Image: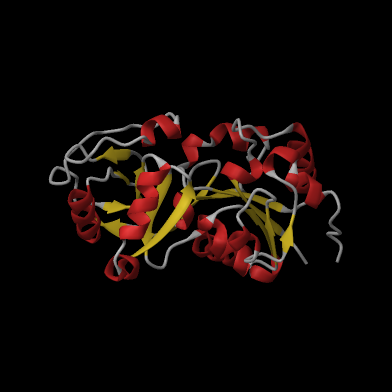
Length: 268
């Protein structure tokens, strides 16, 4: 039986203008009131999506969010950490060297703020994220010796296409590299994705992936789409993403989430 619904944001729950439609809002509130867990799964920190959590009324003591693409599972109210797994600064050295060699930008995120690297090409990340977050510009040498949730390369899509093409086998062995948006390429710990965070949250409730329905559209959703009992891919997802799920709905701009949920029999 499905007890949890996990939802990616950009390209999935959100329309192209970054809003939750009234139809999507209505069905998700209804299911939450009926006892299903509604879990937003994002690469962003929780304070950057708080308005969406409030809109959906996901503010009960046992409501959680998957943030930083799985690296942090956090309680919505109170912000207690259920699961957390970061990258030490030393693990970012090969990535920084790669960016220096190819003149690529890089932003490094801890679990509270963003550190754009000033010794590299300026990125688009702050402009694209458009969130109430602290951005502290430092060189890699000045970057604090701490744990980090991920690193992000944000620039024109053709440049990121080139960056992916230039990745060596060593780089792919060292990081989990995912394209979350055309202008955002993310570097996570090798074993990290949204599936990891969801596994921790399901265990918290005493459930398994048999109890999960997930919605996504992009590379950073593949883990949770494949692991879920029902993995629903948006109509706007690429063919290789659709092949990873076991159901396809309409696009994010055509209320694809609601379109699927309104027809699904949750009693089975």
